[in-house]
Length: 166
Image (cartoon, rainbow, N blue to C red; front, side, top):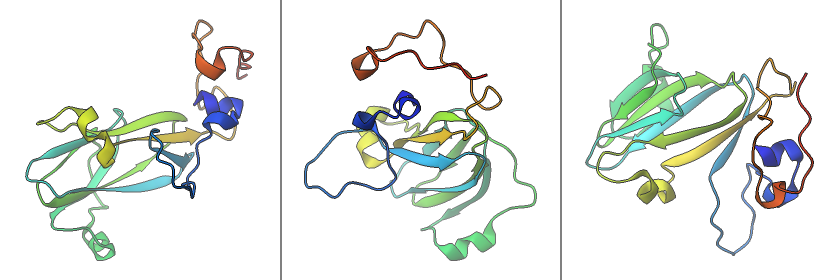
């Protein structure tokens, strides 16, 4: 988030992967548009239950079915009376679809709460990623200021403090 606010090119995040042959380790970050409606599909090919959460964010689970997801499965979505939840369970050899709107700016974490292993063992499988939601307004209406006592490190350490939103 600091990299985006300061427009630092050293840690810029993009939707498109770079076309190079070097292997780099970096977090998975999806750039989302502020206040857009988003559909996320979770598929579980394993033999154990997996639970997913969006950083405590509320969403609407609209379908949970066995097999693989396809575009035709959207016809089965419950769009009339879906209940808001904070976690979705994806059964073995099944998929689940959620709908949500990113109406809070910031960086959110989407991750699995796998019961048999630690989260970090599975991060390389794409079972943990981040979403970056930037507000075009850059105002306190959408996002709080960075606290005054925030400790900066790395390339951010010698940079000037970010201006406060008004």
